[in-house]
Length: 266
Image (cartoon, rainbow, N blue to C red; front, side):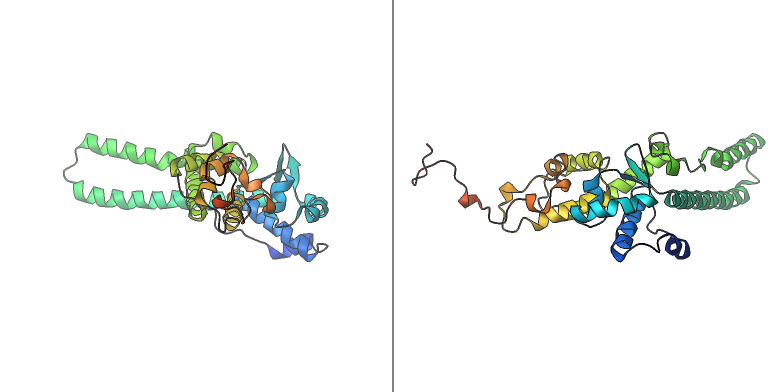
């Protein structure tokens, strides 16, 4: 699940910047923008992963990449788009502002009800303590980061406790969606840990599309030959080519374990 389920698209600005693109180039660019939006603003500079995000074959990607590079900054092994980062920054600011207002309004309502019930019974020192607590709560916004550091710095999540909590919640939601597609649902705890580790290397949609391709390739495959989810993740199997999965014709009775006709092993 993305941090924000919607991505603003300013059509006039987009069309003005992309009038020279072909239909396929438009599609690839928009898919990369959406992938970056879901991934927090950054994509890995990895051709195999980028081509999957753009839904094209490698031969097409070799031609598309120089065109796509016109719209992206490539630095430290990552792709970023300045306009998209700005939009992410503004979305985060709006979310934090609305959250602050909600907390402030809730605090005011609580204070009014609390004061009316206890005005005649509350000692003077309690009133002073309550006022101090109210001031402390109202100043909480001083510690909220509005500098958009998360958009401009991909490592901001490592130092922002609130961002870390939100990021973990998003990955957990993505894992739940991914788990629904897993063809062999065993070792969920190990799979969850492996999924969190894999998300440092790949976006949610890449892992989801990878496990979906793997599941489609398993028609008729014996359960014993279906990879455990954690093993699949640890082996970075989402990068497998379409023809690299287990062939549909593999059946356990077709395997030769080196025995004779009576079943005795040599």
